[in-house]
Length: 381
Image 1 (cartoon, rainbow, N blue to C red):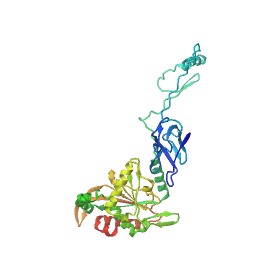
Image 2: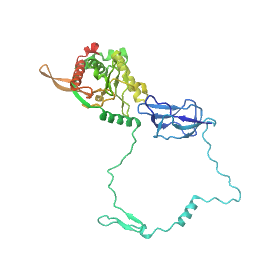
Image 3: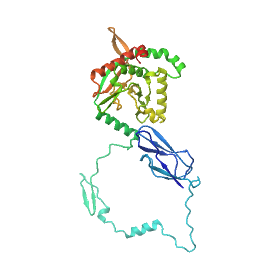
Image 4: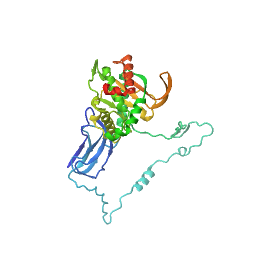
């Protein structure tokens, strides 16, 4: 009996996927629940298991092909045994039977019936001087094309990379994106991290990083500027009175943005633990749809890759995103004197359709103030 292997439900708003790889070959035995293949969606990777035991009889969709929910990926023969298919037996020759004509014999017969190739078409004179097209009987020799600049490789974009590209272009074409910049003195944060490094790790089992400071600072600033913790829906601005902060993490095949739910009610240690968990699961391809859904504001840290300055693109339908960068020691004027301080550039991109420049600049200044005086985060964040 044949059992179809069906593309399962992939999650809310996800209808298509790409077959990444089959883990079984036709003829292989399978057990109920055993993983047969892996699918890639624009957000997460999914494994498809066997609903019945039997033998994988047929693969209908090859690796690299796209499928939709409900498509048939292959079939399982639930009536056969679980051994690999038996090799095809050679036919038994009867005594005195004439040998069957071989492929080589047929080739010779075909070749004998072909018309001879004209002598003019067999030999082509080598060009002398400038190469010009030379016309012969039933053949045309053309000048060579432009030489290749070097080895080339054609690689198909993954479904995730295709979706990232589509959404970035959509954001550029939909929102009126503008970016404002500022710089922040990281001295106090660095001092706190250095002083609490060992005790924090010993107490909470996780390192005290930078992102938790900026998440708390953004929440404090968003409370002062609620239009930024919002999304645009038609002619309506929907303010969010909760703080689900998305943090961009690298998967090796592009960035994804898992969301820290109700970040305003989570401690520094709690935030660091969530971020560590997301980063580990992102690298292993184990993030789920629920991890990526929603979000009211996003933070992306290009500084981990050495970025000095950049203009982040909105994560629609959100109207604001904060970009962090690397920390460098730079000379700054403090109290009329030049001092060397650890400085970071901040970039805040916003949707100018609903946020004006004054509000955007004021928001970023407030983030800077809270980071430079982190004691305020206990009250503001």
